[in-house]
Length: 278
Length: 330
Image (cartoon, rainbow over all chains, first blue to last red; front, side, top):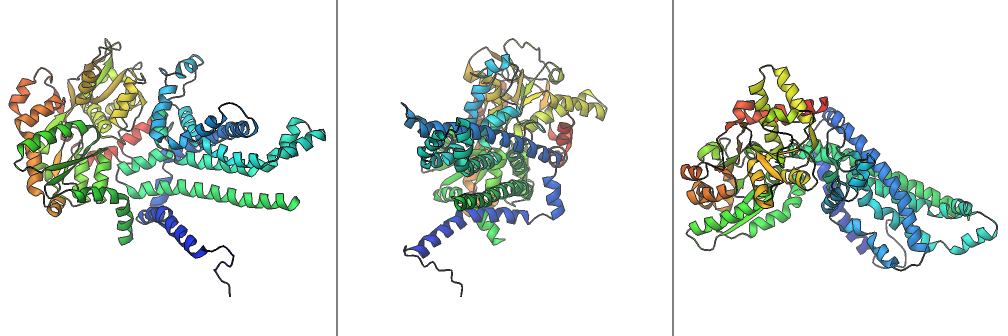
């Protein structure tokens, strides 16, 4: 018989798994099932009609493109930041390390107001950019700025521990064998941090898909131009149309789930291959 | 169905606890976002008027539609003091919490005070904004909250619609006017305070359109001559409806208190208080005393502009309605 029981030597399996499952059910699964129940009020054709409304589709495009650009920016800057924090010892490193988590700690609405104050034409960055003919606040660029801000820690915190575990001896060995800096990065460092880096960017991306508070204060929220999908959900709620709000939310949820699942599967295979080779 | 109620109940559990804590002589007033200070002062006034000593009035503030949602999902508020008739209508039609004809139960359509839509412009009115047709000029940029998410924004749209109907007999021209009007908007904030913030602190736009009361509050608060108010001759009658929720006051055993709380809003001291918060009121003596601050206007009602709130909700503001059509044409 196939038994579900864990036969390891570590005690407390049943209790700890039970509590974990209960917690996950209460906090995660129940709200999601509430969403599904709301959806059961509508037919498939109604569902399709709601999620393919041209204005909603425009919001998918705005949200996806902005989230993609924001997570790529975070990918580059986050990697650089993690590298600096791990590989160099300098005065204030601890402080910088702590600051990285600030976007998580700050209420997103506060972040949105602060960002719009900075980037508006009468703010600090705004006037300089205006001279170059670039407007950030109240344009789609503002959405990217807000997304990049709120999801920056994901990449840093994913890559940092892997970089810490990577022994400097590997790089020294490669250097002593005559590899160039770029070559070392591409063949020694990158393969090791690649899964963590990609996971960080994927988390940053999915977080950006759902972000609301920080974005609406800087986006301008013009229909077809700078309306994000979360705002469309909010608008449907304001119309007391819970089913439609749940339908759009389900699309975002499904997209995020699929992406995270795909990344996880890919990562497992990649790590197996990496270990199998070594 | 029970599971659905349970899931919804979980989300409002904290609010429910808040409501059930209140003693027998308690009242929960669910109100709109920017009325916090107003009702804090009014509660003081009312508790002096109410004979019993241990009176505890709790306030809850938020976007009017969000407040209505919380009540539909189980928050046991005794009275609502909203800034949109439609948000109380939904409590009657969907929640069965009060009769459909609730507006006839108190004077003036159950609206003890009202306001209208006015313009805030920058110092010396550089773009010479006087009326609604100045707002569609090409060089003018506007800030007002999103009509999809804010009652304030919906009133602004209705006011412009009323003006267009007076100006043009042809429906095509009316729609063209409204389409141009919407295309002059620079930023759509979610609520009135957000729009005020965008106009004042970010310096965006030539004109902020919001409640006359809000415009005057801004001027009182800033105390600067960087801005000035323009009240157009024709505008929309923005009612601030109040009602007690029959089902909830029955359960909370607070019917008498709830009615007295709302009826007292029509008394002279309360109307003076409301006028102090820059709202227009009905009490003749208070109106006379404040005549200078509140010039006589032609205020169009929802019946004049759209026939009824039902029509406005279903055909103008709802998904795929007139507003969505005009916004997608830009």
